[in-house]
Length: 389
Image 1 (cartoon, rainbow, N blue to C red):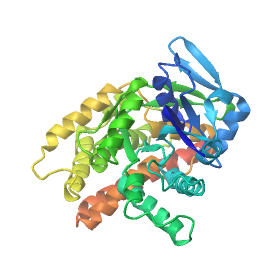
Image 2: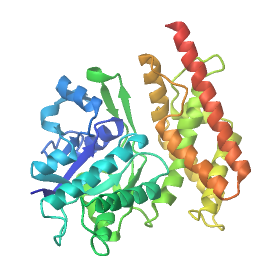
Image 3: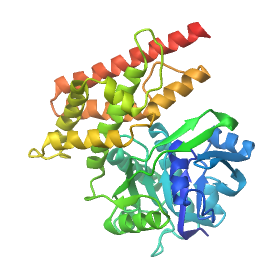
């Protein structure tokens, strides 16, 4: 029988963002009381490497601290449940293209809870599930989550959960839109994690009770987590998309020159190198699509949103954007492919789809062109790397 451990937090998986969350939720590694830990993602090769290495190396102001994985890395959610415990909150932080697998695991967890006779009880031992990966995807994945539950019902693995149980489950499906940063250096057993400055994470989605409890648990642990001003996860996703596209997409375009040479730029260099008109147009195109899908009102002042974007970027001036880090790592490993990172794919593709559905063909063409330019630059960098090998 699975039990939710009150006040506990599972972070899935241990990656750059997840380690940064861990760092601040443990009082900068001073409160290692077993209530905050990492969770394996099912069939994850990186988790296996971490277990074999025996430690997680984290850079702190006092030097590098190596923590034993046997104390900090728990199995996947299904194994935890079979062992009789589950965290109250799960921060889900993989690449966006890995979220579907996590959602599939959660549905399997529901089946397991049902088989244990706990799904139809007044209290369901299902953690608060906070999706923290970058991208515009929450509404889509929530719908996929419901569809997978319905599929399990169709095949007799779950009972009919309407009308009482489904709302309880979906109320625990939340979105954490974060400006928390982190840096990953190296790979495999030699990976070193560098948490960025403490950044705010806003909790949206679910219901008010879930958002409040989730924020309370995380804030009590010392993290910068708070409820969003309103429950709209998609509004927050669009706001964050402005930052991600400015720093990550434009950052990659600027980090790779016309010959394919790569230089890992920090945010301050990206802002300095970018023409303000480039950032302004990119931001306005996102804003324009946002108005059509009702996340921004027709009366909203774009200039206010643009100014907030610039201030947010400046607050992280010394950070190397995650996608620029990703290109750097892939080049060093010799595995760079001419395709968008998952972060950009889960921003640009939804924007193209929404623009086309809204009749904004010119805006859809703009994002298609940006996508083409990025792939062209990545191709140049890959070819340059192969010639130098």
